[in-house]
Length: 181
Image 1 (tube, rainbow, N blue to C red):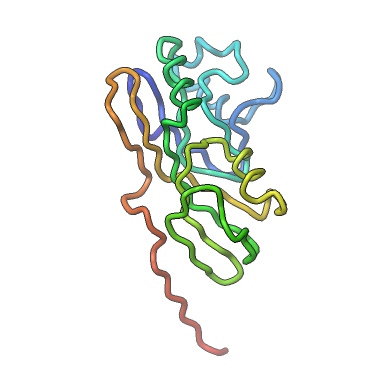
Image 2: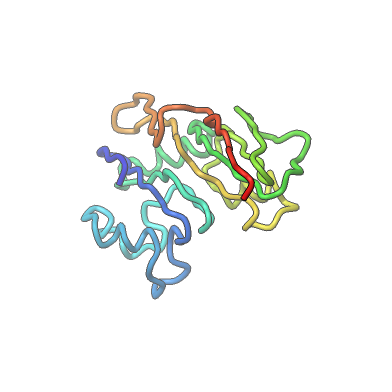
């Protein structure tokens, strides 16, 4: 858990696991782990998607927001529908060829070896949708999203809040040094 308030919980989702089960028998998902360790979510256990506000592809990682109670659920869903939340992603693309223009705000873009690393800002927290919209020609394994920052209005206070896993919005400068054998 990264952050908790009366209305939301921000959780770091690691790579390789699903957010929620496809059926009631599936285990090993992020939501299953939250059911085991959070009393508020255990009360919502009858729902497969209890508290889930946005979806991540299993290969993606970073911050995810979960609704903590029904009192604020409608407010949070309305904020998502009205595009009032901002998600900041570092996107690593395995191929160098990118579309000439991406339909999101591109903050920075760099080539590192055979990869392209792009920092984007979007109002879409669903990386399944982002993959389809931004990189439909690429295999899902060729694109990895890392959500490092989310800006939202907290329903219980009405105040704008930023949750971040790191302090900077830009891709760090990286220098590679090598010597022949």
